[in-house]
Length: 125
Ligand SMILES: [Mg+2]
Image (cartoon, rainbow, N blue to C red; front, side, top):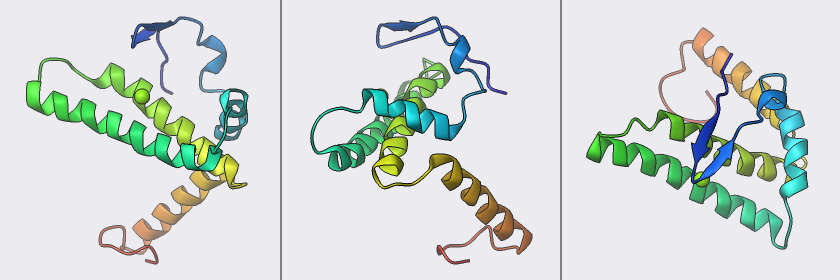
């Protein structure tokens, strides 16, 4: 279980995370993202938002490699959350369920491991 703690990201302090602890399923999370998903061009914005947030996550790692001064792990939580938000929006806008996607992905990887093809390349292993 991941322990959520009080944290401060980009001057936003989150202190009331108790109701969002591990009891929140991916499908529930996906549904809740609808509350904050407003505006036009939703599908396009979801894809562009994902690209931006993946970039921010990678940027943290790059700065850690370059500077090595600040442990970025506490920042990862926020950026991974941002990535997850856009993944949820892409799934939702396309009528897909994030929980189902996660379950299928685990089954796929388990099967690959059992068949000795987890290394290598290609989607259809
Ligand atoms: Mg971000």
